[in-house]
Length: 153
Ligand code: HEC
Image (cartoon, rainbow, N blue to C red):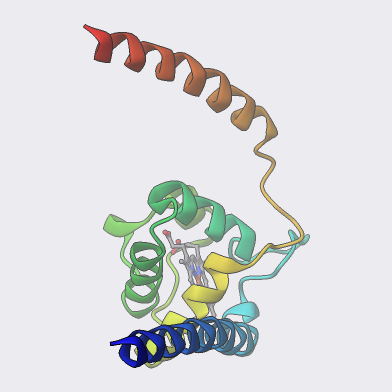
């Protein structure tokens, strides 16, 4: 019994380590692929002559929709790159401004790595969300109090 437990503990700690390593490798692959393909149109910073939204803007809009749900975030980006579709857009203003993105049907695993990279990266330039965050925090507190009151009844 003791041996089995020790074995399980050792094995599971190994798998945690290799899991973290796999994730890093995935993100590194995603960065490479992003910089080979997507960066032709999606820059890291706002530029004078943008032809598509910058990477951080995509991240912001997809994070607003999917929050911490990384699997859903990644799936939406993979699906999008294969079949851009105005009915599925989370950035309707970008379509008006730049026109619909052409399909980029890379292999699913490449697109998924790119999506993992977009999900996990702290881009240096970000959308200015300060004002909005302030509002959300304020609302969050009040909503929290209201919920507590509701639960007490
Ligand atoms: C030829 C230029 C071009 C390339 C290359 C390109 N995109 Fe785009 N992409 C656009 C444009 C233009 C938009 C904004 C209009 C839109 O949303 O369709 C966009 C929008 C997006 C959006 C937001 C979609 C929405 O409307 O919700 C995602 C996600 C995206 N691109 C992912 C990628 C990924 C991943 C790659 C690389 C595999 C990539 N793009 C490569 C032009 C490009």
